[in-house]
Image (tube, rainbow, N blue to C red; front, side):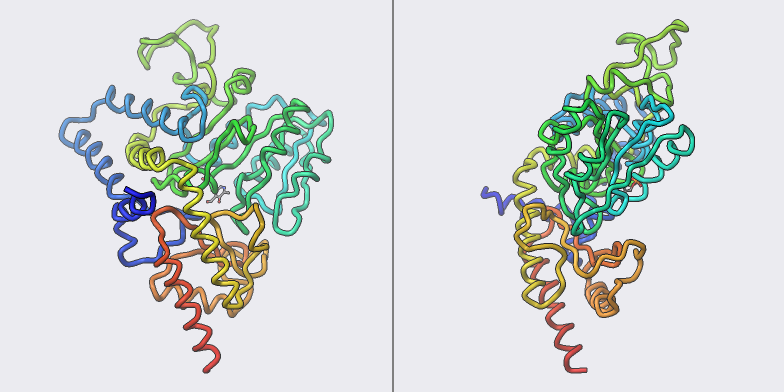
Length: 401
Ligand SMILES: Cc1ncc(COP(=O)(O)O)c(C=O)c1O
C-alpha cells in the first residue's frame, strides 16, 4: 500500500472526517474509533469484573514504552502526568533555586501555563524571570542565549508556539544550554504527535505534553519526559509511593525504611495512581503514530499546511509568516497577532470568515486574534480544498454585498 493510500485508510478511523473539515487539533485532535474500543474494553472489565489491576499496570508500562519510542527516549525517562502544566510544575518545583537565580523565557509566545509557574517561583523564592521579547512572531533563540548568565538555572520554551504556530530552534537553544550546564525544559504539546519530536535531536532535558492535542487522545493525561541524567539530579517537590524505589516486585502498598531512594529517571515524578482510561485511549493513537512513523506524519502534515497557506495567500488572505519559512509547521495562522484576544479575530472581516467556515462544517480556532488551522494526518487535500472554496465563496459574497 502506498503511503498516501495508508493515510486514506487511517482517515476512516476518524468518523468526524465524514462530515467535518476538522482543523482544531491545536486545541484537541479527533479521537479514533480504536480509542473508543480500547476504552470500552477497559470499562467493561471494570463494570463487569471490578477491574484487573495487574492488567491496568501492564497497560501503563506499554504506553510508557510506546510514548518513549515515539520521542526517542527510554521508558524510564517518561512519567505519567495530568497535563502540560502538571509536568512543567513538577520540573519547576524540583529545580534547587536560590534567591538571586534567574530563569529565561519568552512570555509573548508562551501559553500562560508555561508562564505562571515561573511567576510563582519568582514570588516564592526570589528568582528573576528574564522575559525575552519575541521577534517577528517567533521565539528569539539568539536573544534567549544572550540572556543567560552564571545564575541562570533553567530556560523554557515551546517546541512550536500555540499561536502563531512556528517552530522554535530548540536544538540551537539546547546546545547552548548544555554548554552552560543550564536545564532546558520545553512545552512540546504543539509538536508531539503532529511533527517529529525527537528529544535527543532537540537536546532538551525535559519536555511536558498532554494527550488531547497531537497525541489524539483524552483530556486529563500527559507525559513528562526527563533525561535520565537530568532527572537523577533532581529531588521531586511532590512524592508518593510510585516515586520511591523499593525494588522490583514490592507491593504498591509497601513502605520501606525512612531512608529511601527515588525511582530512577522520570518515574520519581509520578504521584499516585494513573489515569487508566486516558492510557487506554492513548495506546491505539501511539500505535498508529509508530506505524506511520513521525517522519512521514510530519511530511504529510506540513505538505497539507503548505497547500492551505499558499492557497489562502493566493486568495489575498494575510497568512502569518513567510510562505517559505523553514520554521513553518502543521499550524497555519491568518491575521494580525493580538496577544490578548482569544475569542474574536482582531480583524472583523476575519471574524466573519471564521463564522462562514464554522457554519459550513469547518472546525478551527482563534488564538491571539488570528485564525488557527491545526492539521493532522486524518486531514486530506479535500479538506484543504473545502476551506479554500468556502473562502473564495465568502470573498465573492462580500464583494457582491
Ligand atoms: C503550548 C500549550 N501549552 C499548554 C497548553 C495547555 O496546558 P494544559 O495541558 O496544562 O492544560 C496548551 C493548550 O491548551 C498549549 O497550546
